[in-house]
Amino acid sequence: MTQTASAYPTFMERLTGRRAPVRTSRDVVVLHGVTKRYPNGRVALRDVDLVVPEGDFVFLVGPSGAGKSTLMRLLIRDELASKGHVVVDGNDLGRLRRRDVPRIRRKIGVVFQDFKLLPRKTVRENVGFALEVTGTKRALVGPAVDRVLALVGLTAQADQLPTQLSGGEQQRTAIARALVHDPRLIIADEPTGNLDPVISWELIQLLLRINELGVTILMATHDAEVVTSLRKRVVALEDGRVIRDETGATYHQAD
Amino acid sequence: MFAFIGFSLRRAWQGFWRNALMSLAATLTMVLMLLLLAGFFVLQNVLVASLSFVEQKVEVVAYVQNTATADQVDALVKHIGAMPEVASVTFVSREEALAKFRAMQTAQGRGDVTATLDTNPLYASLNVKLRSPGDLDTVTNALDGSPIVRNVLNIQALVERVTTVTTVIRNAGAVILGIVGLIVLFIVVNTIRLAVLARAEEIEIMRLVGASDAFIRWPFIFEGGLVGLLGALIAIGILAAAAQPASAAMAGFFNVLPLELGPVGRDTAALVLGTGLGLGVAGSWLSVRTYLIR
Ligand SMILES: Nc1ncnc2c1ncn2[C@@H]1O[C@H](COP(=O)(O)OP(=O)(O)OP(=O)(O)O)[C@@H](O)[C@H]1O
Ligand SMILES: [Mg+2]
Image (tube, rainbow over all chains, first blue to last red; front, side, top):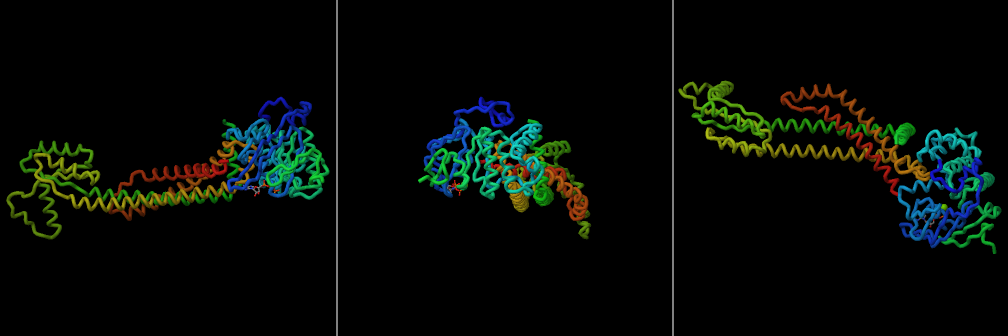
């Protein structure tokens, strides 16, 4: 399952206790002077610098259209930067060969507001899908899926279809799928956008727990209450620029 | 590698049945289009056979000098018969020519005018059938060059008229077959594109979780191949069932023309199978490609 034998323990290794957590000074994400101009001329990011060390929990905030989703699309190389460098886990995405892109994407788990689950597959199949389509041996899929389902608390719902789940359970399925590749980084674009406040809190708790296991988390959100009460690192975008980057910060700029 | 092929085949099979309605619609479209194509293909074959039957009526007649010896005639028949442009050569002796003439006169209800003659006024002739009317000049010149040939009947104008007509009809048939082929191509590829479009979400998720292009592409190609193969087999089954009554009807209709259709059945089956499989595979390859560009 692990594609590269890294000197650093992965979250799965920490979870299974095979290696003790180690603090590293490695940067999982580095953006340097990144500008993104879409083909229609619209500039979504302007000269953005951002460094996210391994193990960080970062909230990405800002008004609608500020460029949060664009930044995330750059990280999974769904889009390429027009200018500057995007480096994920030591790989400059601008210089990456096309056939190496899937390898990078397996290091990143993505979670979206709309879950993106396959409606005709059960929870177990949806999570296992991520392993099957990346060529994992069939015998290894089952145990890996069971482990992440236990982590997100969906063991009992494993054989249900997404339509038979609550919104929170659907999003936890998506998180399990994001985790099953043992990623270094989880990117969550407004993961609580479709959930009510109580369920949102449960989901945030889950993400915090995953973060404690060593997975770096970058989460875009409009939820001021969550951001303010957690006092994590906050990166604020406005009109494509980083206007604030503080640790232990609140949703709104302190006066 | 085997694991990958196994994976792709399994996913293709699952994909086919998970979207059973879509897959069956695509297969049905495939069957109808292949039947259309096969129908026009058979018609085109009948047309071509009819035209070459007409063209084979073109016969070069060379009259032979009365002084020619049997050996000379034999040599000429051999020489002309060996030419690649020549389909067959028959020698009609003076006596046979007279007999034919008499038979024709009797058939037309006239009296036998030749009875009053004391010598046979007709010449012996070589009747040469051509493989293609375009070779008329070559064969005429070859006959003209022989010392024992008295003259060659000039049928240039007639042949030109016949070939003009047959060429036009033949080309029209080929163009129509080509147009039908394009329509079939367009409809089948579009149907497969729709079937792939219905799975856009699945493809997007595969990309997001880091599936390589091959893992995304090949299950769809196998699935397209499955639709093509299944469609082709059904179409061939229908054609085989229809072939017997159809050819009986055709024989009744065309019995005036002893057409040589050759192995049309085999050719049609090969065409249907090749087109079905080819379009299924190429169609899904093209359709998935649009998602893999990025
Ligand atoms: N594919 C695209 N083509 C052209 N312009 C785009 C595209 N995607 C986004 N944009 C533009 O880029 C800007 C940034 O969009 P983005 O989706 O990154 O904002 P956001 O911060 O995620 O907003 P929201 O909070 O509403 O999700 C917007 O002005 C948007 O219109
Ligand atoms: Mg967004």
